[in-house]
Image (cartoon, rainbow, N blue to C red; front, side):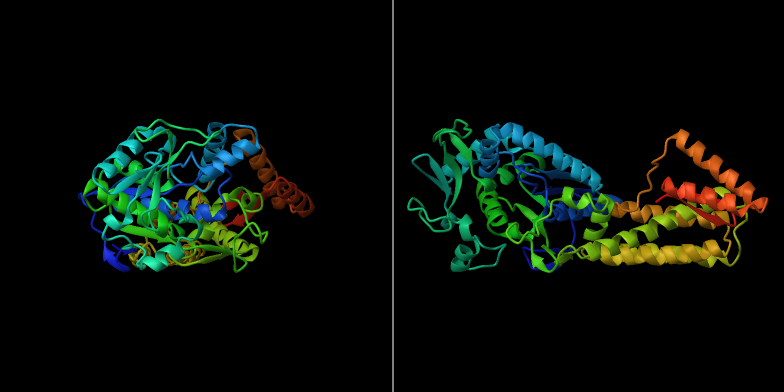
Length: 469
């Protein structure tokens, strides 16, 4: 398996530090609002990376944080006459709601910054003791000149680093160097504070992830991931802090997903094209959002539009309909033994699996992996028409379910109660009898009644198949 490492700008063979185990850290959201479609991409992409690593047999410890102390949270709390804790707790729950909808597995640990203050203060003190940081009137800065490899992730020179940081690198006369950044900021009236040896205050943004990664994964982690907007300054600064404090390489592999544009324009509130996941889920199911994200390679930019979402919904339905057709076929077909010519079909099934794994082994190419699933769907649909054996049908169903599960897509959920199912099946039986009696008006009326209930029916060789949608 080869992954593209932002640190080296090339694909590398993935070899974790400890055989069979992977330590993975993904930067999570700052919780002051609902997550937007840009936040959803790393959620879905790196959940899929985790799923594939587990599919390959790795034991993955997956850490994704919540930043629950920040200027934006404080401003939101002041605006709503609330507290920072109330705001962050509310939007952590909303983030979980959206993540669950996107079929994102919960992390092994979801640490919160406010619960890690003792460890944050401890790492800042270590950096001060080692001469990698300095204090000025209660503000603690990281001294970038003390870290000779500063800039190794973003591959920029000093002038480019300052320009690239835009407003995140502020003009500050107390700084020894323009690229120095804040580890601890002194308390301001009306803001939360924690006591520290150099004065009450709260941490800077970058130190938080360094501390949480170290606490839950150790000094060196296998994979650190996030959006490409975090390469500089956030991830660059994490490396500088962690490697200065711990004296070891911080992360072996750096994975970054590309941006999402909206109708081919950069997403921004000023352009009126800013969408939360909740906004989109009101028009398209969460599962379609996930499928849309996985239809592009994670490192490439992808464009969000209503037309593309509709196309993804149609594509996802093709896969789900095939799963439903296979399940119905297996439940109702006769026990036909495996035919001699079907042995070739079983070999063909393995080719789809190899095609899928080849795509995923090449830097998690989910777009090509989905293409392999589409080919399997076409193969299965033809085999159903050809009246295949039950044994072959079961193997196809297992393969399709297995590959879809790796990507977290096309789950078939039972949406009817037993009472609903009994009513639906009674109507179908009544329609079947009406057709036998050549009472086609009654049969058509029952079909219309079922359609009004949101039920689609299909007449097959194995009997009537029904499903919602």
